[in-house]
Length: 189
Picture 1 (cartoon, rainbow, N blue to C red):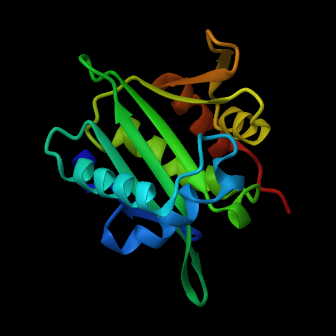
Picture 2: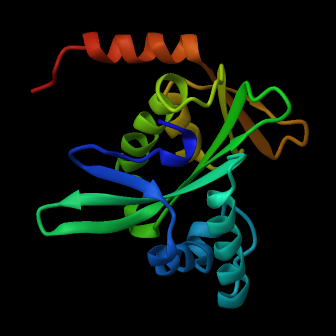
């Protein structure tokens, strides 16, 4: 599997590379003030559509420097939009990947971010051929939900130089220990 082929499905969520069919999902995220509160300025429809086209073009690049995925929940009635994820390779060594995730407002704080990021991180370290040793993420310091999400996944964090952001880091060794501990954890009733 190459980074450009990366897609996954679990019993509750699935993700595949962003495609033309995902324009409405993309617009719903980037034009929503509540979703963008911790991301950046709210985009108008025209600007968001232009950014969507850029994301599609980046997904097609052979070099695979950055990838965007559309994420959906798997439900008895079918699939429902959930959000988008991204992974950006650091250059020149390609030993580090920065990931990101945005969920629709009504899908936030329900544990779905963890369900999406777990197979993505697992694939980055073990399957996808990214050739990386470290996964990073960053978020605004005031985003408590993001802090909780990345901490739950085993990331260590530190305050960024500007004190407005937190930098999160997870090594492949930390991830293997985290996955092992989850596999050994007793099932709750």
